[in-house]
Length: 259
Image (cartoon, rainbow, N blue to C red; front, side, top):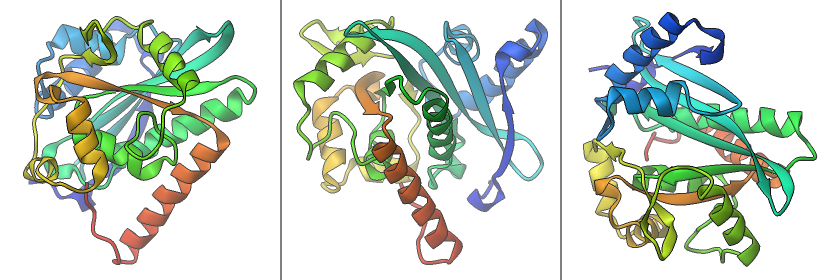
């Protein structure tokens, strides 16, 4: 079993720069890993979502073990949308690590860096991260790192943010589970839980875990809770500080990796 400490950073791959055959090889390689992380997704669906979505750009971070075998991935996609008649950038992502390698939020580091790059490249354009989260662990980590996420158990969701989230999610194809609730979508990805993730689901604390389960009770059937994160300088600096502080404590042996 591969240990967390044996994860090394692999290269960033941009599928648009690969040939058709190279993209197919990459897709097959990542799907073999994906099958140990998620159920409910065919190889063709995986390819359309991760390798060749209808995005402006896609960048994929490969996570490798000491022997250079791929043990995880984080794909970040950039889309252009109109919000209230104004151009906006929307970031979406898919990520997963082999079960025995989870616990340090490794994929979140790459996502935060990609968000920072987009914000620096487009300082005057609104940037949002839009997720459809299919597991409590993902929602818990977003709440852990970012000062402002919507929805959140302790932060009221402004009507303006709610409308932005509605407009953006309805511009993507995943259907709503119930017509009356646009903020829970039928994604189809089902997380193959580790014992630690099962334990997290049984906890009464932190409050975000209970909130996620109440708001998205069908997550074990592939339902995804819509999450909107405004990529503002305040939100980014808070996420970067939280991540760096955690990594420093881990390096000093004062903090144990956990979900």
